[in-house]
Image (tube, one colour):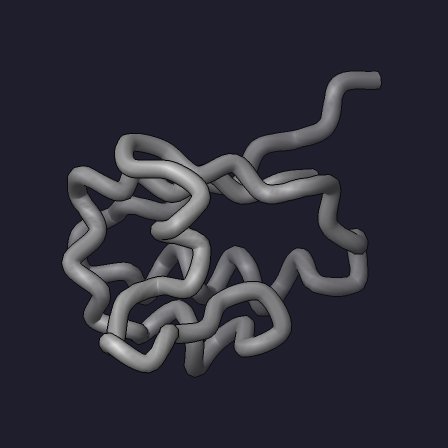
Length: 74
């Protein structure tokens, strides 16, 4: 499982950080920390299945619907 974040939709509200702080964090400027890696779309490395509930909550809580959970290919 991975997450994809549409960085053009994301407004750095930080709601995701409260649901899944192991994956989402803000930098010193209040921006999602992985914004430095991409400008359009961030795709995470493979994430542990034990984080699914927190990641789904982060996706559900995102006010701009910028976070999507993506299943890993078999």
